[in-house]
Image (cartoon, rainbow, N blue to C red):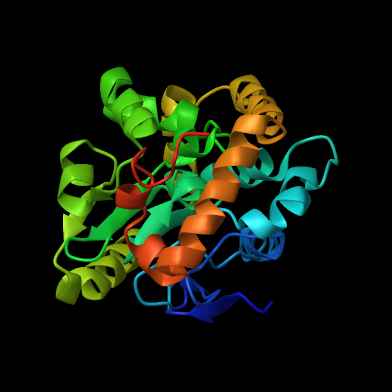
Amino acid sequence: MKQFTISEVSAYVRRITFANPPVNLVGADTLAELSEAVEILSHDDHARVVIFDSSVPGFFLNHADSEDFARLLAMTGPDAATPVFVDLTTRLAAAPFVSIAAIRGRARGGGAELTLAFDLRYASREEAIFSQPEVALGLIPGGGAGERLPRLIGRDRALEVFLSCHDYDADQAEHYRWVTRTVPDTELDAFVNATAMRIAAFDKQALGAVKKQVNRATLPPREDLLASSTAFAAAASGPGFQDRVQALGELLAAVGAEEVERNMGRYLGMTAIPRR
């Protein structure tokens, strides 16, 4: 794997580190490799807890790579009938290990949707930023955010997130219950490691059983995820998306890709991307 590295933290704790510089865009190769990593660790009898982090400063799991959109839309899970995002987020949530996201940097769009599938989400108070920018690009969330986020933060706040397309800092995300909790950046790694080690000290069968119990009470039906994925694909073929992507491309050329990626919420405003 080129974008993900699996390392052993302890006998029962593993770490998956993501790196797709410069801004950790999520492409077809990203999803294929992450799916492979989840499969490997799902068959690791000693893996009780898996920590997910990023080695690229400023970015955790970023939005989908627009240049790889055709491949992303065509990708499916192992059964060849389930879109890859539905398959991957479902398998992550149901994995036989406890998944912990150590979020330092931006989690946007499809990357934010993947982040929602982790069991626990700990965010750097100073560095984590969250966003669902799809509507500003003529799309809707298609990777599970439309079903998972309202269950976490409520209908009105979820609508605010989706309709405004703003960047949300870690404190606001914690207030909205988007993340499990925020931690000062200098303490994030130690806190996540300590939490992982504590959980991993418990019985794996009990850990898996309580995950299944909570999943039954909180996760959206698979049929709803599939419906959103279909609606997303339909929107991606429409003129609204094509016009918005072109406008965003012009903005990237004029302002610079890194500036836009770091402050996307600001640039997605109607004054920044002209109405088409």
